[in-house]
Length: 305
Ligand SMILES: [Zn+2]
Image (cartoon, rainbow, N blue to C red):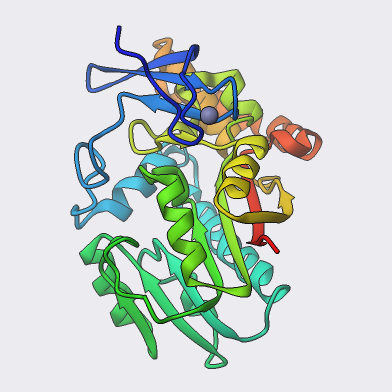
């Protein structure tokens, strides 16, 4: 068998966590014994290839449907999900305001611009979005904002220095995490902040539900970062972690993952949904108690001195 190497630290991969199938194709999840990064193999050749096509005009609706499949069958499920999404954007906005009240901000993977829309004219705003359909929506939605329909590598940003660079659930999709971080470092002010939120590889629901975990999103999520692995790669690329936190107290993932698990065991869809609803109060308690095992990791980093 061909040797496999960690995408973050280049050490060979030995520890298999679990296997999963998508459209009859088998994917194996490895955990790196050196840096702790959980990673999928085989990797697609590039971000623009395969199931998760970044050229898909309906990509946002597709991902949303994937996430709220279980909520579809719950009364007011869509409204609940929209409330949840809105509160996520508000929390993200507040996180940034605690760091800076004005300046130049770059949102990598800005989608249709909902996050950047929160910022007023004190901010000089730039978004990068590889999906040209979403980039067009962002341009229509946002005034006084530069939206570049490129990947970070091909976007022309050379002379710009940002005070804040954000990646909200984007970093786990990127093939070359080291290359991306080095590129970000070149575009960040010496006193600027890099803010990254990703699914947590140590999530209690990842461990409990394995290939039925809602955030697995096979095969578009290539990496599951843990506190240790993301700190490791940030250090290696010239950053220091200022703060790490674990958001996700209000999260449907536990219930949604349970519904996925029950349906994989051929349990009737309505019974699976009912079980998922009944499980939700327990999910909230688990989320409160989980501390570092919640569904997401939020890292705030700066350049090393
Ligand atoms: Zn590694």
